[in-house]
Image 1 (tube, rainbow, N blue to C red):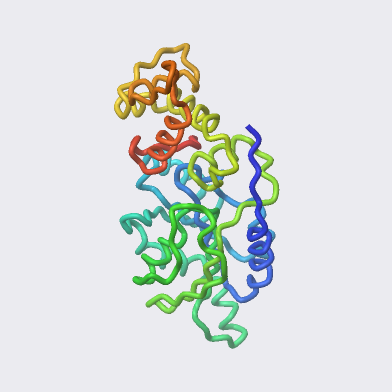
Image 2: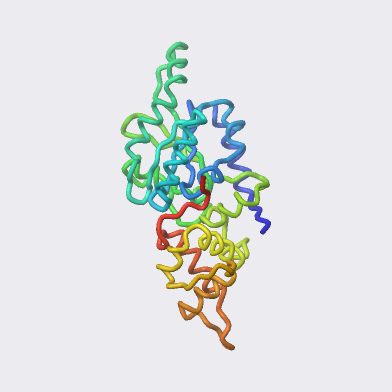
Length: 280
């Protein structure tokens, strides 16, 4: 499944990051706990011009906790500061300030040595629909950033000052020009980082069903009362879900499009349980 999505506003955001990074002391990269590495922007280190990057692993309430723990250890082994959060219920959000201060410590010392006394400034980056604006609103205690359940809601630069004095530069969600890793692109599509409008949602749902059958079969059996067998592929699993839900069209065929939308929506909403699509 070939997936590519880099609309004009993302190219504009890419330029905006490069133009404004000089105003910031470090970068907070928000990633999706369900696909932590796939949701990291490979261009960000060069755009950040060697400014320190720390990781906010968001949507932990939707991810497999054992896998999230492994990913946090993986990031630590790479010398990266990380903190786990949930923008839905605010869990872990209070830890972001401490992580930010640790990440910015070296740069602040350099600033003081040059006689610059100013609050820490942190650029906040992330892929579309990663919960960035919701997280910023939790941090600020007010509706400081626009929020939506689809990619592409935040379109412009926004400065937000926290009670701690930290200044955040919120940037729109951005992918990278070419999604060369097909598996990573698929994971991003699963989680809603890529607009469904440009995708074949039936094929996408079949891929997700195949992954779930292999790694989280109990989620399918419990949610849909699906009867799974070893020889079933993703299409067969989706067909079984359609039959269980009564999604049948004239002639007795499964309504695969309706079933696909339901499976994707319910996975993204956490109704299938806590699932990580990028496993260690």
